Length: 226
Ligand SMILES: [Zn+2]
Ligand SMILES: [Zn+2]
Image (tube, rainbow, N blue to C red; front, side):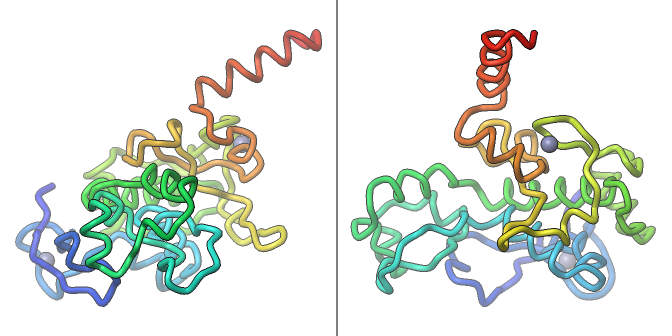
């Protein structure tokens, strides 16, 4: 599919860092839309749509306190800027602890990769058990970009058990039971991103998925389980 590509102005911070564009098919009728594939979820399950957009495009919240240290979440594409450029955008990286800077820099991704991740996460969401049916145009759009969809086929990236859409609504101490997960925690692109149970994602921690499996295998063999 060729995207329309018309530039869209947003009111988001760091808007000018990336050129936001319309992701409807080239030659479409009606209004331009940056995330047209999320429109149905946005109307029916806004928390899920917001989560997909946030996880795809923003860094995770950082635990800093000071007002002048910058916003809690930052567009991932802004993390591709130099410290000097970020300062011109009102974010002084030198005021953040080095550990936080490293963490934020790990989340850097291009605008196109972020939109691509949002498309993949939406495609995976509609294929969860108990997911709502995608309207025809949205299903056709997602299948054109990512391949055919089948309900119930989305599994946790870590433990490979099926994921249930209802888990989005379940939260313990404010933490959702489904999280966006990275096979390599330092690469944000659609090949590398999927969903996982919260506890599976937490267990993986900063390890690459392969490293995590080796680690778990070592433990299992030392305790005589394999
Ligand atoms: Zn357009
Ligand atoms: Zn799992």
